[in-house]
Image (cartoon, rainbow, N blue to C red; front, side):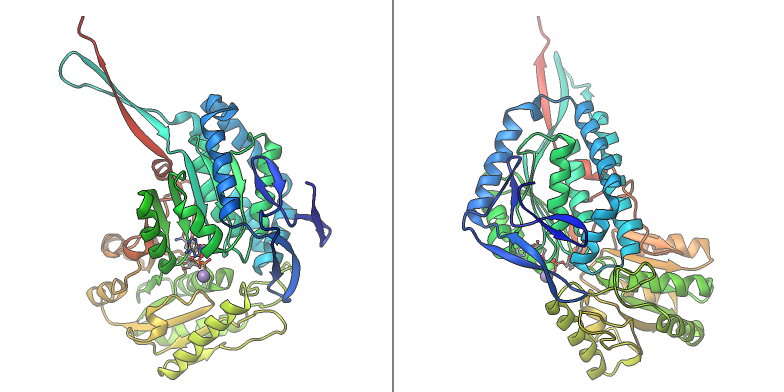
Length: 490
Ligand code: NAD
Ligand code: MN
């Protein structure tokens, strides 16, 4: 590309955005800095996209959708491009992992083994779908031949969060491209780098100009312009429920299709008949993975009374052993939070927990400076009405809550406006499946936590959003059905 910044031995896109297959500056000429949250240092300058840039990108996406090679391409050819992209991601895996870690603070071992691996897998999975999507013939009455066509929706605006910058982009790009749409992607302002690099890899893989456009910028300018744009057919959004509410209101003006992946306050329920050691390890992974910056994090740990004390003892002992530190070190388990704003938000929840009378068992501090590190934190004695039990903290902060029996825990677990995920730990098969039905959440894990696959749908109940990403369900987000009637009467 024409302008790059050298960083940690790797080239990262800098100061440009990707529109119509070309790298260009913002119309305003503005830039914003992007940071390494583990040090607070500036990593580079990023083009600051706004209304005019979004308009340019949408026009390029519209043109690419209506004309040129993309709509002519067969489904099999689209699939091949996606396979090629998956391969390119694996080839550049180390570079992508390092950029991701430097920009968002997550441990490098996760960036390599989870983020990059899942991103490549996601493109490969939807590559396989590209030529397996088709309509039906319908046995209607009368002298008619009726069939359906499953067509792309058109120009898709995709707006994502910063906690899995590249993975969230992949969840959105892969099914949209497999089904023949064109895309304008707006990465989170905190973490624009891997999305830009992914855009570059799309170009190299051979996606025609305008099919994938990447416009970094802020939510209230670039994001809002994308949502309001008359020529965008659909918005796919991942972020906070409050932003989801704004987007839903703003999208009403043009009645855009909308899918929303929002936050959570997911219950993780451990019964006394569970394998306690497995549940301790799973609960820690459930809340401390990715510094707790996980939409489906198991932030409310419900422990059945009889195992509470031994469980908490093990949990705290093991939590204290977690390795917090330099995200680039391969043995780091907990990296830095994404920004100083987010660090302050998480610390303010820790303060609120203490003020409301929850018992801080471990953590609650900033173990390393500089950088936005927070020690894995466990609060015991949390009541359902406390702020730390109700609101999404999006950090490494666990609220331990006691319960007595099944019915009670189901109603307390469901007593939240969120509904993204839930987990149950028990050796009783009937209890596990009964709870899987009763818990109001888009994902329920039994005797595990945070397992995700490209093949299985992911999304929210209630105010955690609507629409399902991943699996075959995401194909519905990016296609629309046309009914065609042919008069057969002679
Ligand atoms: P956010 O809502 O602050 O921002 C998300 C994106 O929306 C960013 O790109 C931002 O620039 C943009 N945006 C902000 N205001 C906008 C506006 N008015 N119009 C259009 N776009 C706008 O979310 P965040 O802080 O980046 O991410 C954290 C949240 O994301 C958490 O609530 C988390 O649970 C959620 N999340 C959900 C999932 C899921 O799959 N359900 C996955 C990851 C994160
Ligand atoms: Mn936010």
